[in-house]
Amino acid sequence: MEALGIDIGGTKIRAGVISAEGRLVCTAQVPTRASEGPGAVLEQVGTVGQQVLTQCLRSVCGVGVASAGRIDSNTGAVLFSTDAFKDWQGTPIKAELARTFRLPVAILNDVNAAAVGEQWLGAAQGIQRAVVVALGTGVGGALIEGGRVASGAHFAAGEIGHMAYRAGDRLCGCGQRGCFEPYVASAALAADYSRSVGRNCAGEEVLAAYRTGEPAARVAVEEWLRALATLLYSIQNGFDPERVILAGGIVDNAADYWPLLMELLDAQSVKVDVHQAQLGSAAPLYGAARLALNLCDPERRRDTISE
Ligand SMILES: [Zn+2]
Image (cartoon, rainbow, N blue to C red):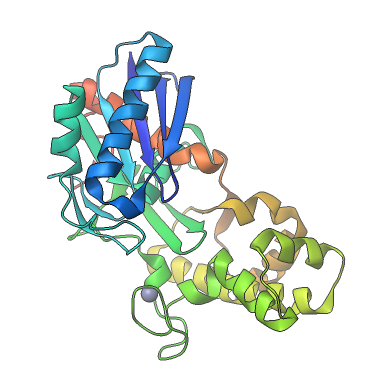
């Protein structure tokens, strides 16, 4: 049995045929065209999906979609989205793609889909209670409870980036002030360092400077890790997980700062087991395919999302 997984990201849409054993049979990607509105994005999804099916010479049993934004996984529509996707809010993704592919479609928010992927094939395998923290432009999160992704009462569970860190302080992308996100996102680390050195740097550049022991990079990384440690402290107290999984490009270079993070966690008596994600940027794609495979197999249909 095989399914089509699709990950709709801010800049690119990736599609892949994935087997029930978790093997990526073939994959393709196209630009998202997020600024052109939902019609353009869905057209791109149809194009890349058909392209990968043709390329693989495969028929699949269903389509799983990981999408940016807050997604109602029952109706399959977008409940909320940032301005990065023009008019994405309200888009009935599931209904549109069921028409396009003439197959059953399942859909989840991308970080929740990444958590499904990590639980299937990555760092959360065999873990019943986990929290996934995705560090990027923003801070995403997903809660795994009883081996399933918890959706919450309004499909907003796991928005840990918007828990309060310094109420009233830095402006967050959500419009509130003092959330963890503007301190903990990799974009926040890059912005802090860029301010202190007077030029624009990406997160990876800050870590490269940190490796050489540059003082400004050291200050920025320490501040960032202090905020991250406090977030992990709050997660431990709020959710009591067996494991927290850190994901995002900045975590791929974690060896540089991991010892300091462990030290800071120790100082805050954080005992939770913290791991790096294993599937990298492919996690949402695998999670999306798992959702579709669950749809194809009625015995597993209720296996992924807790209601
Ligand atoms: Zn916020």
